[in-house]
Image 1 (cartoon, rainbow, N blue to C red):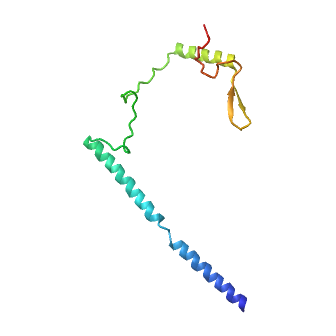
Image 2: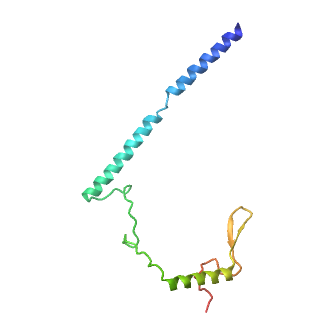
Amino acid sequence: MRILVVAISILVASISTASAQFAMDHGNAAAAAQAARDARAAADAKAAAIARGGPLLPSQSTNFSVGSSNTFKVAPLRTPEEQKAFEAGQAAWTARCKPTVVEDREKLRRVRYAEPDCDLSAYNTAGKD
């Protein structure tokens, strides 16, 4: 009889605890809703500032500029002759430097070269006449 009473007590306690935990969201739903409202308000404020031509707040500014210019020039596409010369240069660099990837004792992958100064770039002219 005691075992039955203990079992029922444990069952009731576990059900009530589970339902209480299910009912509580610990404020997460309210916080998520508030975060969504804040994000929308920030987006609306930025759109309004852009529409009226006013300055953006530092947190709203996403423009990037170099040397007071926010226009970047794209390099022109290579002509077929330039592409062939580039590929020939790459092939010559690969043949001379023989890059290989090795893993050091810290488990970092590093590139090793057969010749000195190959790690600077394929366009390196240091020490060349």
